Length: 196
Image (cartoon, rainbow, N blue to C red; front, side, top):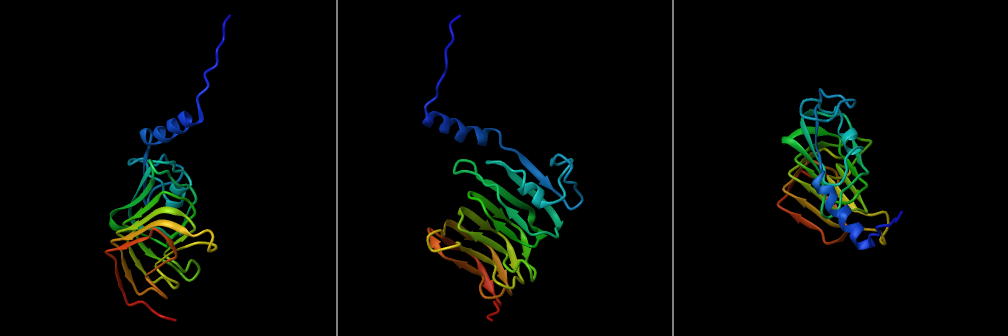
């Protein structure tokens, strides 16, 4: 019996992985009345944004329905250049949460109402990540600022961060603070910032 082996070059395998993800991307749903034991569909949504953040794969979109979510979300699963992960509140600014801690690349946070508490301090913290977008959010009453995109050290700074179309109201220190490269800060409204 003749046997043969198919060996793909590394570039071909990378191409397959890059194009596979968007083709099989999912759209998940979160509702204040949902359950994390559900499947995350429109008919059976999840109950927490954190569960969605712990589940997503490159190319996925998470629709978060209106309501109050008593949580600060850690985003440790990201996307890729061809398949970013998107978290979108529907309707716009209808979903309220305590903020986001971004620990992955190629992510979009769109349309949330964010109010950090005395523990979380910052509305959206991006600490050395890349290709992250924060758009169309209403960010208020965050003791140490609305959006902070920097890094753990000068050698490991964030890059390609977009902060666009947001409203920042009555936050401490700053509305937006960025340290890094290729930053886009555009069309935001910032008012009533409290200096300490």
